[in-house]
Length: 408
Image (cartoon, rainbow, N blue to C red; front, top):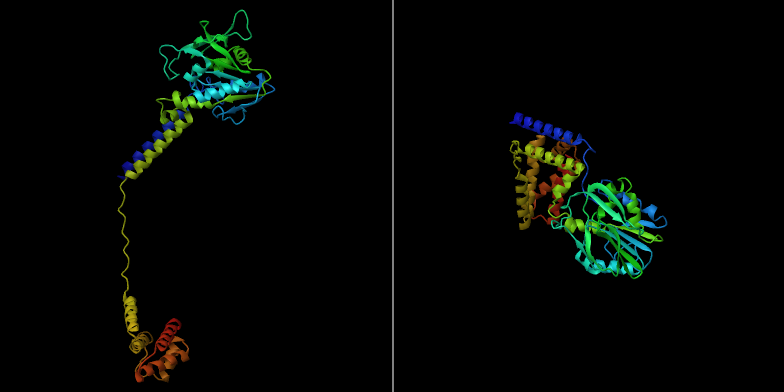
């Protein structure tokens, strides 16, 4: 059994080493990372690191920050101040009625809101008085439409022919098929020349709705001269803006509500190479542990305690019995008899004559004080001659015997 277990353990360890070596030696950088993150910290093709980092150049006099709080609960934005801008880049803009009311109130006070999304919420379309056209095969999962090559054009500033920009990556763009022309201006178009970027004025500010968020990804912006599209798209925001906030609330909210339907925690682990390697290592360690616990174990040997000496307990019980009855003389006689038996057994002295010679011999053999031995002997003589013994005399005799046993 032991030999087979060792072979199994060695096989598992060898398999773990092979798997980890394969994972560690996989060629990196040869395959395009197609994960659509839209996160400002991600430098992968479909992250928005470039877009966020270049805000300083577009707004040199503004303070650039990010915020994860829902509209109306911002920490760095004042809903009542002016010359502020909120930029939202999220595949799904699932703002509820309260969110939209707070955003529109923010705009009316003299601020700008720029939203780039594939799918505005029902409340966003309703309050902005527009309708978005989605292809017939579009579902709530924004990762279903996966055509390559995106071409967009922008009409900022207004010119005879809108300028076109393209890249060979994922498309994911949509268009407006209905909007309020009285309050809406068209700023951009898709490949078919249909509007995908509009401006709505409200109060002292503006609300911009853009339906091609792929244009803010690293892949698009770093392809040829596409940074010009980025510059023109965000140039609609007032140049004297004092604070620009990159909103991350709707990006995380979109993941919770729509983007990750059907996904599970295990698939999220295996997306990342480091987490995948850690998960495999943990599984192999668990397997090794199970195999080790399967080996045959020796039954626990029970603890056998030595026999307990109950003589002392018996003596104490009998002593309590005599004491409780008040027969102090009888109890002292038993204690004296035990004392004499102890002297005979241990020191080999006769106890027939308890005279001065006995006291001297016992003191010599034990090293005890002769006066202490003499008091004990005198009390034994008294027991043989007189009658009752008081409780105080019993206690005194007991202390004398205990002192002798400790010093002898």
